[in-house]
Image (cartoon, rainbow, N blue to C red; front, side, top):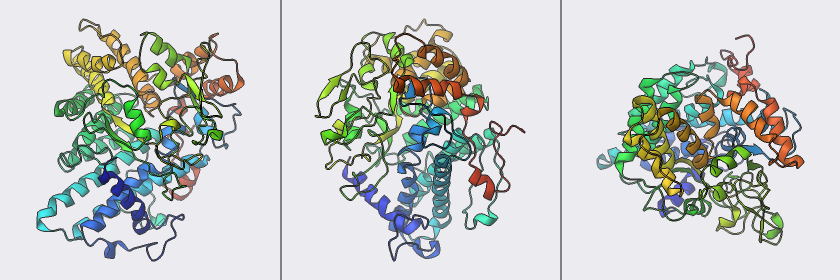
Amino acid sequence: MKKINNLFKKVCLWSLVVTMASCDFLDTKPYDFVAPETFYQNEKDCTMALAGVYYTLVKGTVYGNNYSLMFSNTDDLSYFAREFDGNPVKNHGAVCNTHDAANAQLFDTWTDLYDGINNANVLLDNIDKAEFPEDKEYIRQRIKGETKFLRAYYHFLLVQGWYEVPIRTETVTDIATSSKAATPHAEALDWIIQEMEDCIDMVDDKEYDKSPSHVKKTIVEGILARVCLWRAGYPSEGGQPFYEKAAKYAKAVYDSKKHKLYQNDIYAIWKMMASDQYDPEYNESMWEAEFIGTRDDGKYTEGRMGNEIGNMQNANCGKGYGAAFYAGSLILWDLYEKNPGDLRRDLAMAPYQIAANGTEKAWGKTAIVERCCGKFRREWEKSTPQHKNFTEENFPILRYADVLLMLAEAELESKGVTTLAVSAINEVRTRAGIGKLPETISADALRQEIRDERGRELCFEALRKYDLIRWGIYVETISKNLANAIEDARWSNKKANRSGAEGFTRSTQDKHQFLPIPNKELSVNTKLEQNSYWNPKK
């Protein structure tokens, strides 16, 4: 990445010390705590505090592992390629839908997202007290915009994950007096949308155009399209008005001409994310959770891309370990096979593993579900030494390909089959090396093509589960479609490849569309009740 991004990461790490008193692992004096009333003096202080708000993105509980992998890769296109034991208290309970409200990973992620929200509230409470030169008041406004957006985004992750959660816009100083009831699902989404809309003209629209680290105008618009699509569908059923909003914001990104699909090499942006680089010409990767260092080089973040999710790689080759917990399902394979020659198949489902001697070992022709997620590959990392488990590989929160597919879907659902809807999906298909759809396509056919195309393009990117939920087909897709695919003769009989997938399909129930509110949270927030998906009394 460019110099500004590396500086941002260093500031981000340092800022934890001065803004987050609860971080046990950074017990550094005299900066283990600085009171807000004395810390926020100038632009530098506010920038450091903003970096602390951003840092939530790269925690292991959020995009480093839990939210991006364990909670979100429970869909029909990927499966947990390990033996199933059905124990809800095991670390991997959430990946097979065997978790319950006592699961430690759920509580850790819940807590860290609310910590990020509280950090944002502290900054918003104090930024106007800081002194900014008159000619830099726009920087104060930008910091406010980024902070408000991140606060809204963390709330969206909570709402998307746990269904109904408290919206917190005030700083929590005493947990004993901060009990708060959950905000109804649709009401919470409406607040998130309004907050994000307020940020559109506050955040930067020029300086950060080439940076995937910072929130900028097109990111706000792209994420707004995602939130509006969620609001339009199940379970809030907002319908037409929110499909129209989603189309509006996706088209704003489209019309900006600031982003394009990377051409000529389908692997390029993934190699860049693995090696801490960015392409300023295409800017396809719009927003990334950016991880830094390998721990062994003295830099600390909690990214597991390439390790827990990624191609299988034996640690003995000296280039880090690829556990390959997630493999592509037969459903994903068949989506690619609908269009022979799709360039994304071997990217998403790596056709080889890395042997102990560091060489590629090809899978056999009949080894389909053995193929592991290929979007994250440790062989593409550049830093040395490589830690066995922790990596600097970035995670894509928003890509332009996603914006194009959201545009196609929102156009279809709000206006019917339009030239723009067909053109948007065809951009993605053309880059993948498959044929264009005709403008004469029916609405039902285009709807299915969009859903299939989102699977082919965005698999393993923490989006499919939530697509299935908002389309209202999550439980049926897992318990019926995936279950049937496992019975196909082409699905491997190896225990590791069958057991986890079978256990997942057996475990999945209606309640698994959302996560249970952690028991520990319910014990301290006396006004909060378990959400209706997990509370049999509701």
